[in-house]
Image (cartoon, rainbow over all chains, first blue to last red; front, side, top):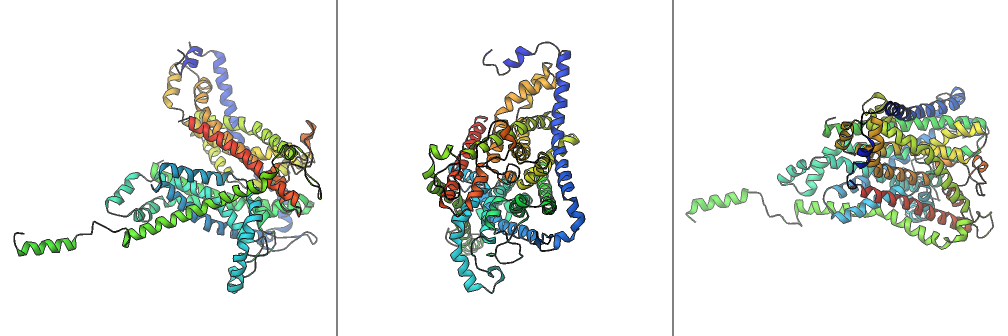
Length: 322
Length: 302
């Protein structure tokens, strides 16, 4: 009997369930139902609590809060347009870099380029990139990345300074180092979801392409990528959502400056890093304004994430028919 | 060979036929090679940050790894020496609080989603919200707990920090545990039902024991993630330069590795910056251990 995997079941259950068994069953069902309901209550409570705390600021500042540009504690003037701009701009730049790298890695890992062992190494590397904490990336950005890119950035500014993207010099923290670190941080998300998207494409599809005499890259670019495109789009949108909410690395690298600039080398600010840097020392009215900003961040990320999940669901349904 | 006409036809045919023997260095073959080269470059480019981070952690943080650093209090502004003891304890305690809250709720919710009623409206909503919450900015968990707990308790505390981390761990645990429980073969459950087991008995005697390695993998990954979080602790646990002082100490501001790194990274003192690197190394090592454990367990499953 020792080798029988059902031994513990067999010895315990003989005869029909007793009243106590039925009671335990009811109880367990009730408990797990409650646990599943917790997540609903949690989300509702988060939205309610943030809304309640932000309400005075919403009444006071109205929608103008979202498109005015000053954040002045003395004058009690609060507006978050520069932060919204910085959040979207940094995330977009990160998506541009992290998206290309992430999809390239996904192609690399799924399209039979590598020996099984080598591809495991790369998979581990990507997973470890995701495991490194945001603050450590911030520290690395301050002491490695900024000194590394500053000469190149300032050369670009000196020679191509008329071009808006290079309009200022990089004196330390700024948009470029922040976006680069952000790109590294969203790369694992994009890569992992894209890998799934490629794996969902039936092998027959690729075989058919090879059978028509395509080279490996013709098969990838003309058959695999278009077929997996909806899944890759989901990966990009969810990666973008991840970038929008990323906090610590940005708070350490973006310079927390309340301005709107196209320049890659100018300091800027994001909603999340505004919260991180201003919250601890904020007075009562500023806290309300920050709660309003938090609500705005919640709104933006919710929309992007729901959109991403929705695309992913549609992409999965395409292949699995459910 | 049989005449001029058929010879000419053969030659024409040969010219019309696609060239089956392609060269690797021209046309489409070359294009394919170039793309492959670009992909290699991109993949190596993407791995560079990891190696750079690891190199810096060891080069800059490795020197200070010793018993004194790991156990003593952080230094004041111009002090030499000092360590990260309270931060290690604080991180451990808050992750423990977060685990105590999120692991039971997460696993129970996963049982509902995987086993009791996978297609009910509650299950579908809960699953969707859990997925949405995995992309939830971690700083908002901090803002939420500040509003819900810190304001009411009138103090920053380890409790608040733990709850904020729990909010972030919960969706990960629910989703990974659900996946793990779904992997349990239906036949095993059917066999148990066939012997007259109730739902609760099937779950506690077949589904959970069989699915537990996968569940633990998910839990370990969630714990690793929580240990590295800093944004949710910024204004829930705040920071402290002392060790947690007994049970009452849990209701006071608490130190953590990630906030220590954040605070010390911006200081103009070499000693603090060195400690920030050391703390980063310790934090990454802790996370690595949990990740490796998760991987080992995850592999055992197959």
